[in-house]
Length: 282
Image (cartoon, rainbow, N blue to C red; front, side, top):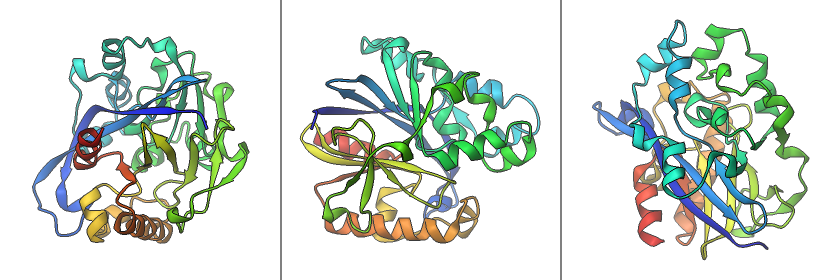
């Protein structure tokens, strides 16, 4: 198994009611960071898991109906917080990113895809088919949290279905999640389907991320403390999921891992507490 390093980067944030992410939360708006994973693979170089926000997001939401997205979830992105700026500060060029693993196609996860012209993309086939079918269906796309214009013009030539990668058994302690897609054929990065939130959400299990297991779980939950306590998102928030019943099943399975396995870093895409815990333990 090839060694892997993982760094979490905060790339913008939106504001929304705390109670939407977890029942029992306040009715006050709080900040939800957009986190992405910067991964260094010994053979395949620099990779990303999602991209967070980017300037492309503001361009894509300038007109109606897409402006509804920006109005409902006000976004902030400082210039120094842009992903390409953060990478440059680390000595990484945009052309150095060889792969972007797409958890799902909501705008806050893919806004930076156009900034990586040399990257290939990996996503679950069902989600790719869903977002490409929304091209030109602007109202339906916006109401579902999708902004198809964020995709590069040659996207379909550069995207690979994770489903076509070899299947590998996950560790038994990750039950009820049993199988993952071996994205590089060496066991280092396993794509794990996390059904419910989108039509094909892809989590990422890293058995050895700088000496500890990490499980990037995207929007399978929005708050790590709420997951540990079993506090589901609000009923209104559940309505935005593609399959509510499967979201609940995925959330429940992840909660079991959170209760049993303290060694694994569970990393939702919008939880600053999870980010801080991972940072402190690194």
